[in-house]
Amino acid sequence: MNLNLILFLFLALVAVVTAVLMLINRNAVYAALFLILNFSSIAVLYLVLGAPFIAFSQVTVYAGAIMILFLFVIMLLGAEKLPTGGNLRWQRPAVIILAAVVLMETAAVLLTKGGSQPPLQTPAANFGNPVDVGMALFTQYSLPFEVTSVILLVALIGAIVLTKKEKRG
Amino acid sequence: MVPITYYLGLSAVLFVLGIVGVLIRRNAIVIFMSLELMFNSANLAFVAFARYYQTLNGQLFVFFVMTVAAAEVAVGLALMVAIFRSKQTIDVDQLNSLKG
Image 1 (cartoon, rainbow over the protein chains, first blue to last red):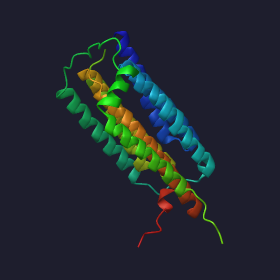
Image 2 (cartoon, chains in turn green, purple):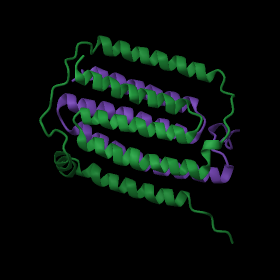
Image 3 (cartoon, each protein chain N blue to C red):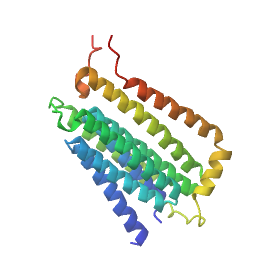
């Protein structure tokens, strides 16, 4: 029971518990806050896996921008007090049963096929630092990088066009 | 360090929880949030494999996935706002205007 295993189990427990609490919460604002906790625990898992740049961009982009956008829209639409009906009688147990089946299949495959994997080797000291990631982004992955700038521009224009009010008269 | 199968198992659990969220919930915004949970589980698998093979390619893919997910969330939430303006609800069971 070394420290790495305890750390991983704690972070995994936080991630799974906050995900479950997000799913079963009736209030959409509480669900968004639990998802922010989930993203933060996954960011710490990225740090443990040796990806500091990705960990901090996860906190900045996902937990800091995307979830704030979600909270804005939830509060704009008043979604936390929308009533929820109850005519999903047979679908909920069916979903839970099928999810349990998929999880058992995944566990079976992981335990038999990849059963005796050694622990992950410690990488170089500055593995995943921003300098190396930036070098790869601008040299080897420069085409996807430029394409993502076009994607962001398209998303910006699309969001503005979709929410524009129609002019009357 | 733990073996990589632990990270893959956690990624699978989070992915299945995301799918359960998309299927069970009827609030469209919570469905979107379950979608983000699925994205994150895939990102976790990518970063775990990047560490396993000691290359940076997995982390760069996570970078692009995050960017595209941000663009998708912006457009999707704008769509939600437009739908709410016309139908005054975001309950997906009531978005059935095209139903024959």
